[in-house]
Image (cartoon, rainbow, N blue to C red):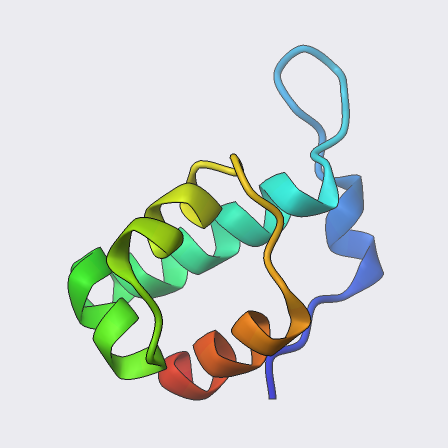
Length: 77
């Protein structure tokens, strides 16, 4: 199951502001995908989502749904 500790929301930004939950999720998804050496297209295929949706999530342009977070968690294991 995909877990995100609340303490992670306290990561400082360079300008002294905190990351939003959306930015933190975006950063974590991108890092996990890159650690596995997967493209956005590969992650999307494994999760049953569209590549452009993955891209907008990773850029923190769109909030992720709980259903999509579950799919990504399963894909990223």
